[in-house]
Length: 241
Image 1 (cartoon, helix red, strand yellow):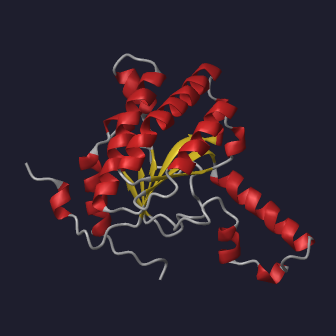
Image 2 (spheres, helix red, strand yellow; image 1 turned 120 degrees about the horizontal axis):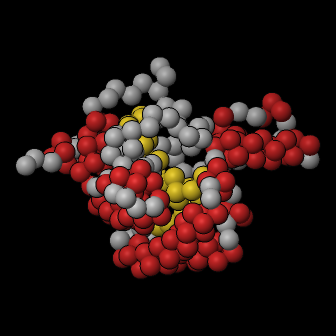
């Protein structure tokens, strides 16, 4: 059986792939389990997708792991997600280092429970010297929060005389976002058949290619990633021109 991997031109890979990991709850419900079962199985998809991206030579992989809106979910689910996050980060740190993967995080990280935040920062520090794939976790993230926060900081700089209103342009705004050290995504993948962006990287995806798949996130495997990249390479990117 042929693989979409054979169709990929390794000289034209997307530099940055972002993924909205959707469908954990629906995948679990279809099998008669509660939502957290879907989240637990989604970890396998994170691991395989990260390893596949690293093997291909993708430079950045951003995963939408927890939005600011997710804080309003039932407390039991939020607590279970945070516990899963802590355990996964701790367990995966040696594997990340083995695969030369550098962990990064974007979002309002101050809202994370102390234990989760500390372990996240520890893993970021331990993998900071790795030179391969940069795995970016979007945690307690929303694009509107990010843009609002950037505007507040720019306004403060204007008030403090550090910059003038005339200095405000695309580059200045980008430099005040949590993604300031990360290139804009070339490809955005959303799983589970929903065709929307859900407050994710709104500024950064201005010219990003969007790819939607019916596959629920816990069922997403390397072949699904190969297929998304293969379709991406068939598109004619014009960047608004």
